Image 1: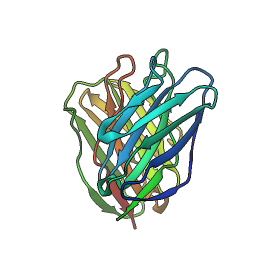
Image 2 (image 1 turned 135 degrees about the vertical axis):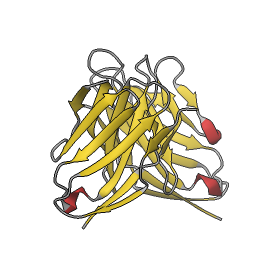
Image 3 (image 1 turned 30 degrees about the vertical axis):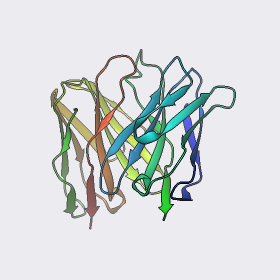
Image 4 (image 1 turned 120 degrees about the horizontal axis):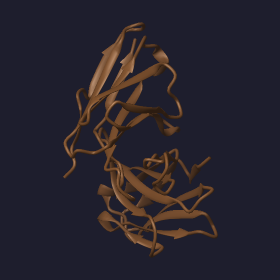
Length: 117
Length: 113
């Protein structure tokens, strides 16, 4: 069975500082990996995804993530935090589509990012 | 842009009531999903549908059922609502091709009194 662990339920940074949100996964097959963001009172919005190919993936709003197979990690980073980045972030893993997978996602517990002025 | 619309943003019901949550997507997606979101637990899959009239249980199906009579609409049903079903419910849809991501609605915050 797949699982996702996000280290740190709350992360606080200053505006302009580096953002690092950690995600580790377990999967019996090479996974597809996703980061989603949820702003207050909204649904989830896709930030970026890794499926195959380049292990450094760039997403929207200046975020990027690196797939490290040896560490089973997919950490999310942004060089300089902005106040508008304050939100909850979810890492998710999916089996490669095929058979009965249908792109089902297993989510981590979420990390709430706070950005201080 | 994909649009996934959930019929209610906020809903208050009473214990024992039968509750319907509706979700409509406008992109002709084959796959649709219902999740519940609780603090500290992330999103957990209740049911999903890979095509019209087809459905499969997710990780926490107990106390819920679903209906997918038309491709664009996926309904979640709480047969007899209980207070432990108070939660945020999120619907998602996905094109059943390769590595396409899921697209989410804005959620329904359901309170069972």
